[in-house]
Image: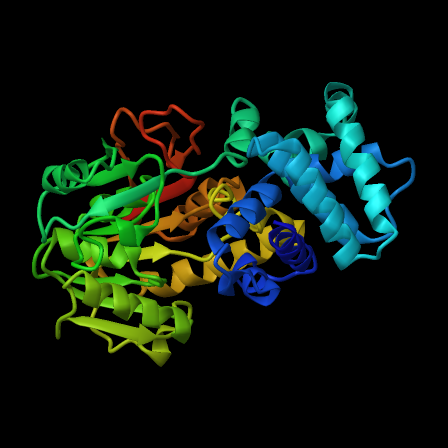
Length: 430
């Protein structure tokens, strides 16, 4: 266990120094060990609660620990004690060994003293450590302030939802069989699931995809319930020409193809991630000569567009990803306040460029996985105001979907439609 704790702490420090979570896990060596799933669980959970855990470590120490590796090891151990309900003495002993191996031999005594103090004084320590907003909500201070300003009636629930463990949500490939049939296949193997949305299933408890019948056969994809609303809102019909302008890794593009026989262009700037689009198309039995996977910048159509207008365009634009932090907890620690304005400027440019690729009478669906108003309602409103032939259409979500206007609010446990935070705005070209 001490190796797992050291690898988890190493990955966390790499994130705090600017690495994405995927790269941090790989660099830590965790992805190459038999305990890969265990380390990932620790890392994801510790990052979700990092603001609180770091504050607890600082509270326990009479003076700040001099080595950030020690802080990370202690935070990992406290996460295991608080959220994984691990056996206390085993966690402490392994953390002590990890501190001696990763920091210095003398760190063992300090790690032992601080963790045993936490076990003795847990309630008092938690109360004192949670006195600041960052420790209370485990988000950066600027992020908390922005969410509170944008959503005065919902800010606490939004922040709390960002620290929850996300569900494993699947989307049945209706071209391979109905959702009920897939659910029956799961039930036959003792796999519990429940329906969500039009084609979704939530598998609880989550398990590796390879353990689920039908994955290799293309019977389903992994896709959040909120993201599964994009294709129905776009409303593509048979024989239409459709552009998914920021397609990688292909979840929404494949959903469009499952619902209608269209001519589809899957565009993205990232060639490596486009390979995943091709892989998903092949696994789901959706690849054909009417589907083009293309590298290109949505903001610069002259470099890739053939001049033939599209009937439907999905503009699922790059954003802060502030609505999906329960799935990507590194995001809230990697983002900076200045990123919001920079991304909003890029979104502005993409919208204007893509509008020129849309046929008259066609539909453009603007989408983000953000909860920040500057990227969402402010962006959509500004686009409508400067684009005379853009007619914004009212969106109607299913009654179980919690939304405010076009904003899907991220869900707390127990929600009927357990969703990440997404935003949608739909425009028709007059």
